[in-house]
Length: 89
Image (tube, rainbow, N blue to C red; front, side, top):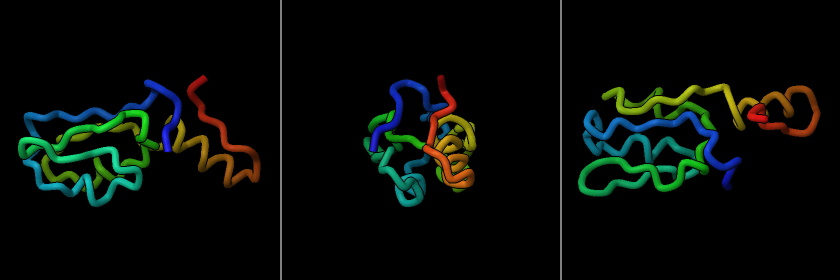
């Protein structure tokens, strides 16, 4: 599932990545692949900013402001019983 284009806060610091593959395992939207022994973001617009990759990266190679953007809008909508709204606008 793609979210709004070019709004995700996800950033990958390739120099810190060891290619361990944990981000691939924990990402619910298959944002990452391993290429040349490093994680690579396949499509930034797949990221829902849940923070699972950042929380599980032992090498601090990932940055994401979890709880903002689309993920926050989906969660807030579910809690309020209203339509999900990305807070990006």
